[in-house]
Image 1: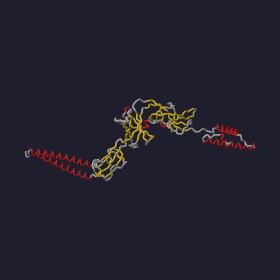
Image 2: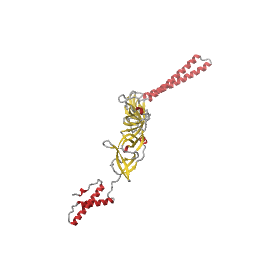
Image 3: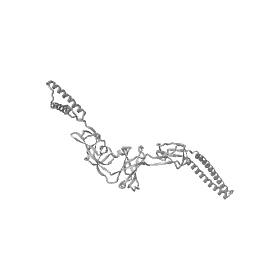
Image 4: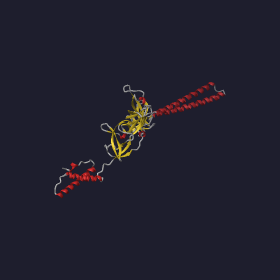
Amino acid sequence: MAMSGYFRLTGHAETDILYRNMLARVASFDRLTNQVNGIEMKQYPARFLSVCVIVTSLWSAGAVSQPAPKPVTLDEVKRESLSERVNLTGNTIAWRSAELSVRVDGLVTDLRVDEGSVVAAGDPILVLDSRLAEHDVESARARLREARARHEDTIRVRDELRRLQQSRHASETELESAIAQVDIAAASLSGARAALARAEEVVARHGLAAPFAGMVVTKHVELGEWVTRDQAAVVLVALDKLRIRAIVPQRDYPRVETGAKAAIRFDAFPERTFEGRVEARIARGDDRSRTFPLLIDLPNPDRLLAPGMSARVEVELTGNHHEVVTVPRDAVVTKSDGRREVWRVRTEDGDSKAEPVRIEIGRANGDRVEVLSGQLETGDRIVLLGNERLRPGDRVEPRTAQPTNSASTAATE
């Protein structure tokens, strides 16, 4: 019969090696005993007794040690006020988008942007051939100079006739005619000024500039093409702020207020929560689904987000706040069958051990979630970090988590 039949390995590498060493020593002891007695000993109970004596001695001396406690970070079960929220889905749209067109027909001689170009308000986008328009400006300036000279001459003639009339060398009719000529020349001068201003405006319209800061997402023209006023040259989208169009059920529509906070999550950033505010409720619902559009504005200073992204939105509703039990979101472990649990740590005689507690969760409040059911009490210590490899009864080395503020965390992100 083999010696291994009397022993079962523990699964701990250090302890198993120790057992094998003890078995080897016992086997050496048996061979020595057989040589002394001259007989083959086959009484394994005596051998087992020898092993027990050695194991007991080593255990009492601390040679066989327990597994080291696993380091974990702890947080507490809390009771806090939680406002009622509604979960919505939405789509990110541009807060401001424009199809930019030229204001005069012309040939593109300079194209300053491409798709993906980021521009500031007032930056040039394209320039048209303006040589003919510039000639019109020069002609208008010449006509203005002519009108100004004629006006000055009529004023001179009028003043001279006034002096002659005082000495009775000019008739009243001649003076009245001179005054009329001054008015006519003044009107011509005003018309020349207006013609020059118009010609200069036409030259200015041979360029297209960005009306606001953003990104060129579509370009419809190319250098050397002829563009017309009814043709969109580029599409410009503002990215410093985005808007989410979400759909709210009619039962929650009256309880959503303008300015209410909204926690927003995107698939592109699953670990981050963005904070926005309700900008408007659209009072025109869908007759079939009985839902209403909700517009939520979201700052986007780093341009991490873009129109077209899907969003999961959580909006605060007006009404009473309720005291509920909450746990950190990261402390909840979801099993493959959908069950959720947290690991509670209890300490007895200086020894901390972890045990799983099955729970059901409800609404979220920043980085904490509501506990609908589960044998948890306020103040219970639960594992926040390090719960991935825990087994029931495992010894742990607790570490306290740093305090965090849910609202400030969401706002910073």
